[in-house]
Length: 230
Image 1 (tube, rainbow, N blue to C red):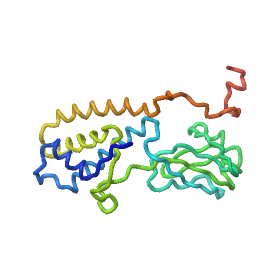
Image 2 (image 1 turned 135 degrees about the horizontal axis):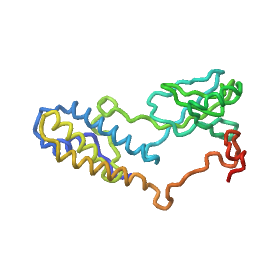
Image 3 (image 1 turned 180 degrees about the horizontal axis):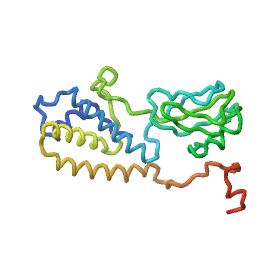
């Protein structure tokens, strides 16, 4: 990723697109809020691609004999949860609510499955001890917080995708001014379609594929294995 733009540059270009370069109708602080909201939407689109455009963060969960553990601040979504066994990592499966009893009726000891529930993560069977590695995607930052993110803060546009932020912020500016946003809405639709299509192609030599999350381990809940279906 080589196309980076500062918040100041994004703000300037948004004003240009909205034809408000010399206007004080929208303050810099308010425009930063628009840019932050548009950045969050672009963030969602890239996350939805299923590819790792943002560096995952790791939370260490130490089991204490209870089912639920608080998710970290700034949590967006889970990539995976593993049980730590020495230098090895054993992946937990995500259980659906209708599968809960399949795991909770197995007593305590070591968790085999997880579920994200509100601001907590549920581990089942309830682990009496052990350590678990939670790899998750952090939530997008609030770019309107100038104390943490001054004008010199850079945003990665990847391949001109910063234009989505610029056009969407300009649209919000014109919307507040009660001016026509038709042209920008059209541009925004084309940009979103382009990003959603191209975001899937991050590794050109390796097409996306279905992965075997069970590997060679047979799960008792895989009824089709027990039935001999191949």
